[in-house]
Image 1 (spheres, rainbow, N blue to C red):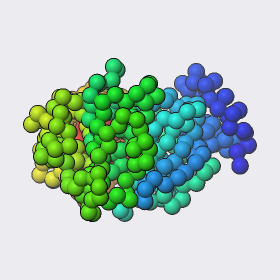
Image 2: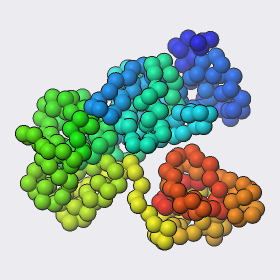
Image 3: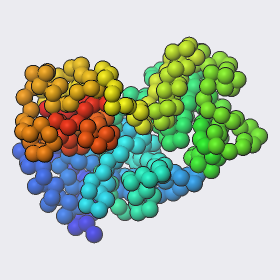
Image 4: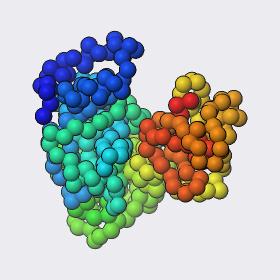
Length: 361
């Protein structure tokens, strides 16, 4: 039970901003959370105020962020952190803004998913979850396109639904088509809301069970697109889903299927150990962005770029080269395991990038 009421704790938060350079964050946060979970120097803690299921596999949490929250644009994503058996785990989700400063987060249960399974089973009203500030470029432009096409697979529906809600709040959707892909009908979330949206042409596409009237079978393809959206070449397209889905959308765009395309993937590509592809390495404290390769360790590449990170054994034993990875996908060269978790501690000497990476160096 918090010692301070929520309105009082949140009223204090804006007063802390001028003091951030003077206060030690870890000490303040330790004593602050004794008084109220949201009384943190910079971190955003959000209270779970409601939970419900959409379809068979998507949990929707309604969250009330603290006043450190800077808001979000429809389509952006946030890092959500929870503690499981004493270990902090972070995953990215695309919230949907609600009235009164609330946000909704749709969490699809993934087979074997540690964080999604935990939240489905244990997240409860009154609990506090840490969220990061909003990020991402999957944004509806201003002015909005006259004709647009949305391509969603699985939980990729959430940022696109956020964009649809934002457009409706402005007056009307305009000319918009949504192709919504899933293996089974019962796994699709927000279908009733989508069907009720005035002006939205919704097409459900199933890949794992027989279709019913009004549905389409099969995965995204040029032939299917030509059948369902004959004027796709005239439309601004947005695609969100797993990497394989967005890669297909990118291929269609390269073949001229869309006027333009914006994509966001929630899973990494299937990188191979022997890959040697160009990436961008951002050294945050040095304020430098330089070209890198997937074929070398982050320690070797930082040294080649003129940085001098602390290091010792260069074998992953002494931990001297431990570094904070802010963003990006990396591979542990000992195990081959790929990690995309933000705000993660890595060892530079045994870690290679598999995509663009932001390091606290």
